Image (cartoon, rainbow, N blue to C red; front, side, top):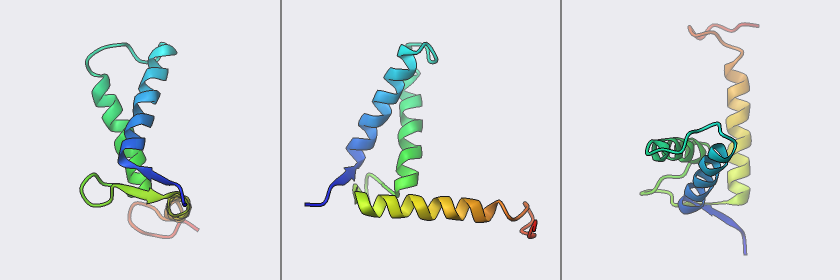
Length: 88
């Protein structure tokens, strides 16, 4: 059976990140932490291509490939300025 990452998994990761940031005194313990948690989860979901309505889970191997493709696209984008001109 191939392992998967679900939308719920990314929520749990975001919760653990916020808890750790509080433990390290980087983030105060207050009511705005849900916003931070949502922000972290959104960023993780963007990288993995997850969406609560359309794509609730992704296979680990697919997630790795997607992350690699996104990283390559980011590197290639650095070769161009804001006007789309090649910097090289």
